[in-house]
Length: 441
Image 1 (tube, rainbow, N blue to C red):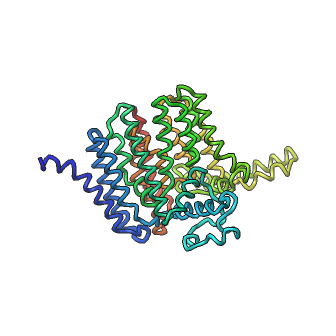
Image 2: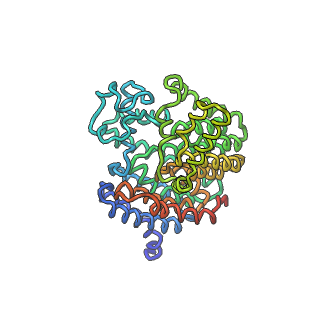
Image 3: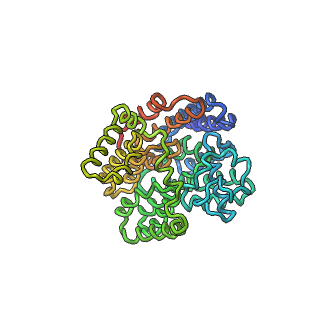
């Protein structure tokens, strides 16, 4: 019996051991070689374990190992990303009665809240970019004895709820619990939520709740969960039309979603309008965009910005409206032109996918389209897509989960992202993308 069990248990033991090694390394930001060796071992063990257990894993095994892996990495300091420092700061600002959408961390009004973590926090000139539900969770964490660890624990609870909902959704769709292994045991969400404390774990729970309730034909509750997903992170707004179409009572679903979003967002709109930090993020943030990185460089080499400026010059001569056309010159640069192009591409993809009545497939396709067309794509952004890739057995996105940690190399080693690191991450992805589909069977 022991000989029969060992080949099945060995992958799970190797996966747990690799995560224990990550914990032993502790400060991952100071040990890039050790970090990537351990991550490589973790992903190798994960793919081995997932392939062996994808058809036969019991729900208790799937969820039990998911809990164990996350508990093991909770003590890790978030040294690969400083987002958690900003979460804790925004929570303190909110708990102190200030408006984090209006006041940037460097504001004089917040001087009394500054501490050692404030010193290490970047982008002190920008007010928060996070939606109200996320901010509310940050505020709750600020009241705990250790706000940073407390926030990571809260996010792990939320993400583990998402794992539970993923297992249930797999069963409702006629799959075994093993289908959820591709997310629940994946080292990337374990590292990014339990280790680095990213709020995307809250989004995972909310969007899985929305789709699970849609499949369960509970439109009001599904709509409320969809609204919560938008308030956790804004990206699910692109899926709302597809989720509405998939609902058996679209009006009820949309009314519930709108009520939740408006109730939380209206105070923000009345006090600051569109949050300035969010505007700055949309215009200025650029890193590791799957298509953006090569596209803007292509535009730069082709001199497209000069061609656009020449077109504006001709428009001024023809129309005589110099003041009108002068306002467009600041936007005639390669990066902005690439963003406009990708916005157009996303519009095409949205029109192609939003009518899909399968909420799982529609979620994967639409959120995957956002990811591909985004100018910024950090490793933890994959959590938007990964649950749907797990259910749909989408090989390209599953492979990307193992390669995206390479995006930490520029920060850890000073190596340039483009072209080689970008190519190592996205080259295999695009090759597999042409051979992958969102399986429903």
